[in-house]
Length: 184
Image 1 (cartoon, helix red, strand yellow):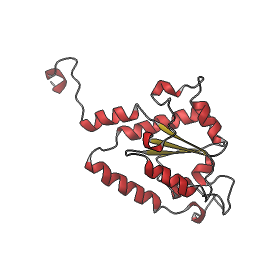
Image 2 (spheres, helix red, strand yellow):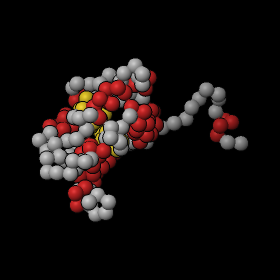
Image 3 (cartoon, one colour):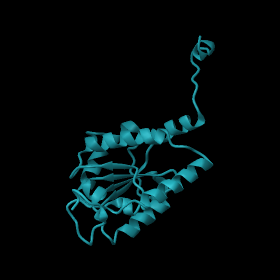
């Protein structure tokens, strides 16, 4: 005889964080930040064939103040990095970043001084999407995985502490160009 037997039908038990997580994960508003060929696939994601509107994210926001998801699609140059950080800082909390494509994730084939070797050196990244360029189906899958992360994020004053700690940890990671192994 469990708690389920005592509760009348039609009543659901959950937490406030669970409700907020469910609402947040169901309404991503992505910011447009297409930098290279991956941006074409990101635009295709919003087209009728894949129709991102089915999941509540059909409107790509031109203003960072109206967006909560930044999809960095393509390579980030050293000159573009401060602009990327400024746009990230202008986004309201909670905010998430998805690095789309191998160039945004690790610099890709552009292993030189002009390209940032991974956007995670500029902003904290929540989800990495590999591929050159990744297909819209892969972007859909990455967004669904990101939705699961959003569902479990804390809210309130604890959220601010977690955000600051997460950003600090992400910025203290070993830079990609200093890693040993298959990268060099």
